[in-house]
Image (cartoon, rainbow, N blue to C red; front, side, top):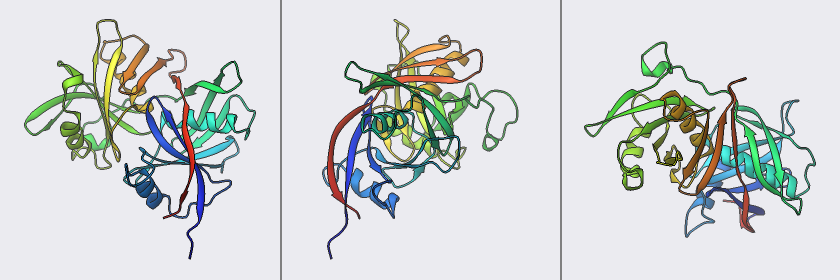
Length: 286
């Protein structure tokens, strides 16, 4: 019996790449299994995970997105993914709306599209909402922003800032060169630290002489990725909270730069960055 074939689009935002499938056309009965199979380098398409574009189930959104990491776990939010969904929807003629309102597990996100001369989406500004800055209950400490919270792994202490952008982040500013830092070794341990019962995204950052925030990320469920939109937002917020930057930051990741602004008026974090199509193809369902 022949397996069912579906069409996909491989897209990335600053190198954070996902496989995108339009579930208005194709049913993906087991997205976790599909994400694991398709995301494998060399043996599959290769990606940080799978994003499903579908109908909204709430009246105040135009479309919905579901995100699956390459280990099959479902993520609540992906900032780079939202921008790519906006480009997919606009450039493929599925909507003429601007802004687009997108349903995620972290609520409805508003996506403002910036077009190039040919009318295609070049960059997207996403209203990421307000960051959550209180210490989570699992820290065992009540009250106060979670700034300079100390965690120890393999005998090394790290001070970080907890910021939730609809998903949890622990942002660590290093006193050493982040380029040479062993993100895999310490990121994997901190992701699964007992203080994070649902695991956590871990950012390692430093402020460069020109004011750019250089950040590298270990994403829960995916490992090292070239970029993380929510992580860039969390890092910019942490930079402001710790007095390293003002309310606007350029966050440079392995895959490129994102512009982050933490609005003083409404407290929302605005993220602006690129979205690009890598290639399209067909593959079999697992």
